[in-house]
Length: 350
Ligand code: ADP
Ligand code: MG
Image (cartoon, rainbow, N blue to C red; front, side, top):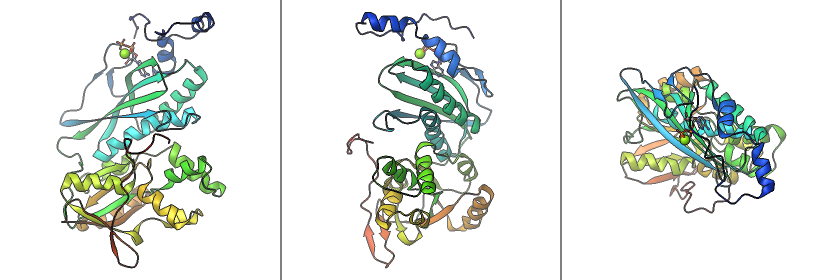
């Protein structure tokens, strides 16, 4: 597809020194960059990168699920993050949102602000993005590329049979509460990178890859259609995110501390306090938290075996609206203090 629009964005609007001008004259144009790094073969797209808009045709009877997530340097990732891992993560965190709706990912759009046309960085970033797109059969159908402080914004579109998406609003009193995989590892990975904790090499690797290469639970999300009554992905901390389900569903919950999947974190050599804080309140996990009637326990066990993924039953939905209680191992009930990560009440230092 020929690109006919004039180059414009790749020229700085600020006064340019002659040295920078010489540098810019040998820099690849915005369109070279897009052609080289972001024009991939597509599978579900009628018209993709290169025109003014993409053309997409959802299959008959399907509803579109659309989600956008932004990754800001200094807020969501450390400035020296490996660009290939970042490319993976930028798409993966968005696919996690589609997984949480029970939608099949189809299309993605990538809007990038880059401080400079650093080809080495960009090529590694694009490789990571492409790897994630290939792993989950998602097309990159368009985007925008501009100069500015490093900022990545991805939009994803998925398909779900009309009326079958799993929202946050369907939890009923008496439902079980479940979480997939091993929440907590990503927060421990961040603490390890910051030098706040030491783990053995295998545990360090597992936690850092949970942080940098999260695995969106797409297969689990799809399989939970017809089983889960409400669902979301855990991006800001398990307990804080669970509150969103309670709020949307008009219910409460009791979480059984003894049932939380803490054992693997303790095996990694993490102290019980830190492990519990990471599991309950650490961000960036991208596991699925969902509710389901007790009658579906066998179906969920079968799913866990089929997907080779842990599903842990951690609590029960109650009738007391917006009340999140923790049942301590000694049976005491205490209100959950953990609220999860909130960008406007936490300093932007992650
Ligand atoms: P316009 O000026 O019409 O907005 P652009 O110059 O921004 O078009 O982009 C040209 C084409 O390249 C469009 O099809 C757009 O979707 C695509 N594109 C731009 N940046 C990216 C990117 N980072 N990833 C994927 N596609 C991109
Ligand atoms: Mg544009």
